[in-house]
Amino acid sequence: MQLTIQNLSKTYPNGVQALADVSLAIGSGMFGLLGPNGAGKSTLMRTIATLQDADSGSIALDGIDVLKQKDEVRKVLGYLPQEFGLDPKVTCQDLLSHFAGLKGIPAGAGRRQTVDGMLKQTNLWEHRNKRLGSFSGGMKQRFGIAQALLAGPALLIVDEPTAGLDPEERQRFHNLLAEIGQNVVVILSTHIVDDVSDLCSQMAIIHKGRVLRCGKPQDEVAALQGRIWTKEADKAALPGLRRKYLVISTRLFGGRTIARIYSDTAPGDGFAPAQADLEDVYFATIRQADTTFNNGNGK
Image 1 (spheres, rainbow, N blue to C red):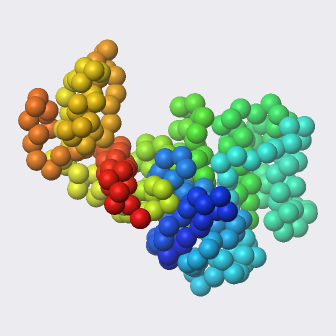
Image 2: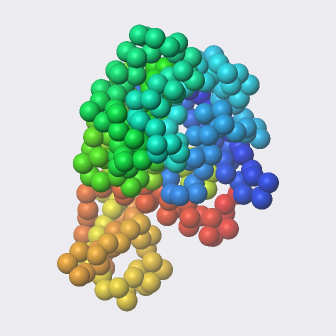
Image 3: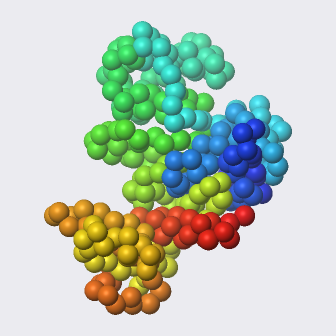
């Protein structure tokens, strides 16, 4: 299974360019789409999910023209949006059975077997007779993934699935996505770097509608080794550091500010080399892009 996106662009009526010439090739397995809020991730996900049109470009899913053959795409698509509404008065099992009917699974023993299987796979079986209004955020997310998987999709899109989950629910959701991703194309759109680091064999970073980086997470981290430097700094010194260096992140530790910078050569000035990680890749990519735009070189 292969999803091919070529030169996809979208500008909204208010003039905001959400996507700018986006091209990606996504195969089976977990693919992470990283970017800050407003980067264009949700616009791209909704376009792939046939919920909105692009201005130009193309999307193909194993020979299916996604932008023109929307009904064909929907037959093999599972979609968990960032926000979705559920009737709080309906039980988990009843609503999942209703969704199964909407997806063309005929009533009877076959539908019951499919619904029961999804409830067990998503660890909701013991909660099947509870009303959805009593569900925690993590349980609602598991219900969302259950409805997305009902028809055995070849392409699964999940948009910010772990935002707001506690650590236990987040880990449970990770395990579920990892299991699903062994057999289908799963696109995980998120701004949480650890989600991509933990789950994805391929990734892309998108910012201001543009794909800035694409590859294997471990390769992107390896390419950054030797270019990340760190030191403690007073808060008052940060503006000076930002003028002199490309500061990619700062964090408080024990009451002191730890600054991390990107530099191809040893900067001196008290900085020590640091082991790079995927968070550094993400922040360095975003900061470099912002510097380019702020200098008037963006297009």
